[in-house]
Image (tube, rainbow, N blue to C red):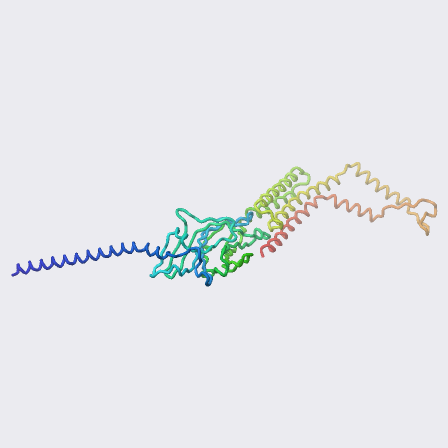
Length: 430
């Protein structure tokens, strides 16, 4: 009995195992067939979705305007040029809108091949203040199309553009600039399409991570508006990027060298007035160096009609350097003028003594009432008064001490330059 029971148990177990394997195999086959059918029907659904769809007609034709929402990620700002008044920027731009003609059942979105963009209606957005721009296409077109069950569409692309940026350089290099990035519809007016930022200022991202060599981005504004033209009013979005120039670079490149050159020119005041080659060489060298610095700085800037802050500083520094050279010219002239020959000095001294002697011997005659002649018939003569002679002597004594000019310049030049710097930095930085 025990042997028959064991045999029966084995037979039942084998039958049960065979049935289970058959059921599992059938289930796997059905699942595989289901996946194949889904894969086969997906293109059919997409083809049916675009059946009768006309990409040349906007959604809600003859109805309310299409609402297009925007968001943007600033990938990089490569260059800000004062000469060309523009900046180069790379952005990831995303546009959102709803097209009821593309609704489909389900609860999951579909990511489509970017080449299908030619079969879709898309907003005719262009960069209003762009000088040049292009779409990236390495290794494929950098574009994204995502379709949602309710007919909503996400269209993203990667763009690099050189954007116009009008700059006010009156305070250069302590200036602040606001560079716009303007998006506008080229053909659809506000009656056909509207623009809006998807989440206001939060629609813009990436600016906090950007580091520029000469600027610091401290703020930005996302604005909504429109552009009026002869053909109508067109929707418009604008991003204004506020940047402040870094002064440290210019302190090291321009301001510090100018200050050192001006101070170097003052060394001439401490050199003996008779050392003509040394003082002239120093003066000419500082003037030429300052001229080179001014020319190099101005070559990096656009030719504009108004005066910039850096122009004021360079011109004043040049004036200080040139004045130091002229100061030695004045000292040298005064020194040579009063270093006359001894013979000439003695003749002048003898002439003064002769005048004083004649004044003692022949007093001035008293004129008649009519003032025409003296009573004794002699001709009236006039001699310098003692006050005139005293002033002549003292004046010559003061002027002959030409070293006082250098002593005075040693104080006047540094004090004046310090006052100028205080006024300059207060005016252009406050």
